[in-house]
Amino acid sequence: MKDLLIYRLPTEKAPHIQRGTFSILKEGDKPLGFVISDFLHEQIFKFEESPESESNFSFHYSSEIPTIISRRDYQIEAQAFLNSFPLLGVEKGVYSRIKQVPFKGEKAVELFHLLEKTYPNAFCYLISSAHFGTWIGATPELLMNQEGMLCKTVALAGTHGENEEHEWTPKEMKEHQFVVSAIREALERNECVEIEADGPYVVQAGPVQHLKTDFKALLTKPNAWSIALDLHPTPAVCGTPRLNAMEAILTREMHNRELYTGFIGLFEEGNTNLFVNLRCAQLLSDKAFLYVGGGFTIDSIPDLEWDETEKKAETLSRVMKQI
Image (cartoon, rainbow, N blue to C red; front, side, top):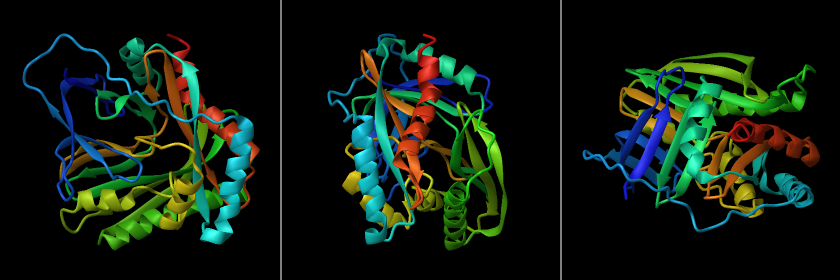
């Protein structure tokens, strides 16, 4: 049984629908075409389209059920996560959780088409393989766009609800600045030149608003893949300093992130569109697991961060309810 790949780049009019095979990229190799990684890019999967058509298809569903925690457990664990910051030297860390909602996996293709219509500026996808099960998403966050020697990326961090009109707090501005600084440092480290930053400004992303800063820079050599691996995971999905934040996440989160907050998209040296895998869900035959997270600084309040993850979950759950 072939694997399934459906995706649509932002502003494209029609999706790409392919059958083929996902396989694990060998360490040190560069992919060519569609690629997706896990959070720490310990596993990177590449896709190879099959030349022959196959009309029969069944979705691959994972046999493992992700760990769901209650609001009360979230408050306890998130506070412990926050308490570890001074000990581990963490300035910002991203704590995530999983929300379970009812959904019939057989309607995944219908859900994809509704997502791409609802979020024309997002990278929308549906993938299914025995390697990782079935995942769907509509992510607003660009990791890297490359055309020739021009490289673009974004800092997307700091979140409000869609109708919130109060000023952005110092905590939110600080959270955003961590990402801006990390991106600039990564571009400089990889010998990019003429680095320009435009922002922050406010963008709408489904049921939430974010602070966004756009970056563009020129490559001095064909090292786009190395830059992508260096940029990811950004402080927007991991934290800063990176290794310290990773330790806090791996110690306190009660689930495996799997493909959530990995990168996803198309890679070809000179023509790249990679995104951060946010606003995504793992689908089973009768339920969906929505992966959502929030950025913590020392000023964070776990109860408010829970509310933020609820709003982020609406990106997919609102659309699921229409099916």
